[in-house]
Length: 98
Image (cartoon, rainbow, N blue to C red; front, top):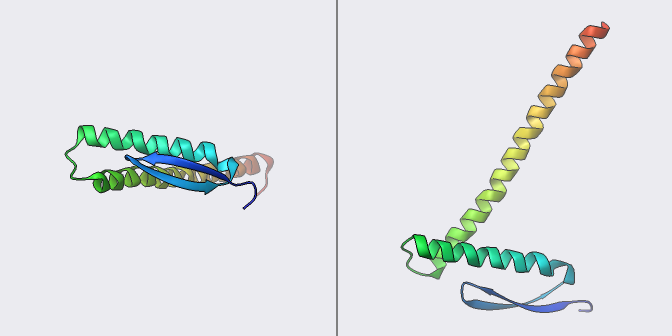
């Protein structure tokens, strides 16, 4: 367990002790802060029964962003491939290559 770091993160009024690689600390702290901020926003704007509902909505929000990013990237790759094929055909036709 050499080179491990012990930290405590607070999420939704609960403290979570973690043992992590030092390189993970910044990302985990930012993630915990983002979850906490979003949870507070949900609590202020919606009638929620308990913290579990708020945390489930946070999980859904973050997971949907990741999924949408993947969909957007796939669409971008497909569009780029189609443009490259069209460009290849255009260049080939100008050079007399079929």
